[in-house]
Image (tube, rainbow, N blue to C red; front, side):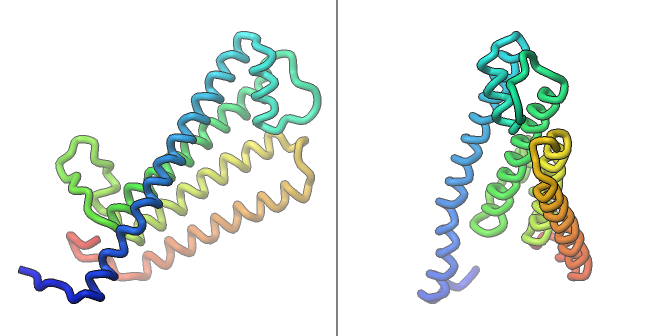
Length: 192
């Protein structure tokens, strides 16, 4: 039996619910990413069948310089598919933040035994969430950097250099977070 909290600690503890609108906002952002994905996919399908307007939209969305191609080239196809992968990876990052953040910082979701419970959720805590987020950000940055290098002609050398340096900074930051995490004592079984 736990004793009731005094008013100030109760207020401080209840303030965690102020994060709920933030997570709802991220769910709305997730819906926008789903819309973006399907819009790009429809344009890709249309361009595959020769729709010039869809081809123009795709070329613009990947930042292709010069005249709009008259057909879907392998390079343009690769850039669009990498853009779709990028959207999926950002969407995965959003899910990790929404579910993991809510479970870690707001309230338990009581999903134990649910057939769709994500595997990683059973052992999520702030430290695990940081490492997973760092890894996801590196993946997203890698896709973005690959898209940039494939379409390098559309960028200045300075932009290429800065994107590479930012990616290396993400890598070093994630390695530092992982190293710091290894130095901390492991949580006891059942702790979050």
